[in-house]
Structures are given as structure tokens and as C-alpha cells.
Length: 228
Image (cartoon, rainbow, N blue to C red; front, side, top):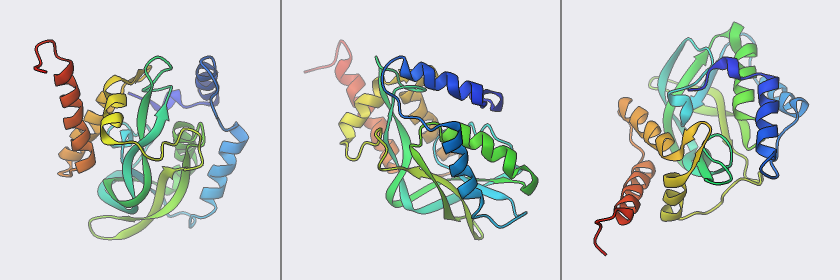
């Protein structure tokens, strides 16, 4: 589990150095990352707080302070394993994939509300969590809540990023998820946790369930007594 104390400039620098020991790793400087945060905050009305859309690990491990959350839906983007992972839940020996919000369709998730007086401090945490490498675009998006539509923060896929995977079939994706593993755990657990927390919210994602079934098929094929 990630904790907010891990998100500091020193820790970010350490993660980048660790990644670069194994090869090239694109990362934003602190100044570049802060500039993207300031650019986003400039779009917000003053003293109104901030809704943040969560679709992956934010569902169960947000690591930032919020007052409450609601079931939410984001239109125009879908949940997809399209971000290569060589740190976190991947490594050079066992590369993985992470979820991102790619264009098209819609996505169910949670919207977390940050109080107005906490927006500054909590977006600092969010940017050090989500914007180390610039793989996401911080977007002010329309988020549908049960009783209203609000403007909020969604981290969507930066398609020009070198770790973006444009098209990968279901079986190849499942193979990466079945074997990917890094300091933060396995891609398999990341998938299963996402499914479990969506189900707690009475939500389903067919794409994720299809991947879960495909991983089970791969496991069955590898089993010593599986029939050929």
C-alpha cells in the first residue's frame, strides 16, 4: 500500500534513479511536473474544492486526503492496460502493464472530493504519485455522479509518451499481466484488486473480466496435468 509520506521530491528522485539503473527512463523534472500542476490549477474556480476520478489503484489506495467519495462515470475515455511498467508493478526482468484512461467509450469508477483548503497540498501528492514520467495528461473533465455532473481531475493517457502501447490483443496483454512484477507487487494482483473494488461498488468492467478469464486460461495451459 502506498502512503502519502512516500511522496516527496527525494523519494521521486530515488525512484527515477532506480529506474534508470536498468535502462532509459523518461521522467519530468520537478519544475516540469510543477508547471503542469500549476497549469491545471489555473483552470479551477477558486475555493470550490476538487473532484478526482479514480479508475485503478486510486479505488483502493488513494493516499491523498479527501472528505468523501461517490460512484462516478467518465465519458470519452475507457480503462485500458496501455502503459508499459518497468518499475512499480514491473521490472526489466518481469515487465508489466498498468491501466490508463485511453480515448473512446466510458469508464466507471470513484470520484473523491478534496476540500477547498486541501487542494494545494493534495494535488502536490497526486502529482508526485501520477506525474513522475509525464505518461498522463491532467485533464479537467466532466464526471457524472449519481445526482449531478461535475468538473474534476482525470489523469488520461498521454499518447505521445514512449511507454504508451497503442494496440495489444487480449492474450498478449494477459501474458504481461500474468508475469509482470515489481517492487509494488504483481500486475495480476493489480487487475484482481481493481475488479474486486469495482464489484464492491456494484460495477463491472467486461474488459477486465475478459483479461481475468484469459489469465486463468494461460494458467491452465501451464498446469502440469493440463491436456494438450
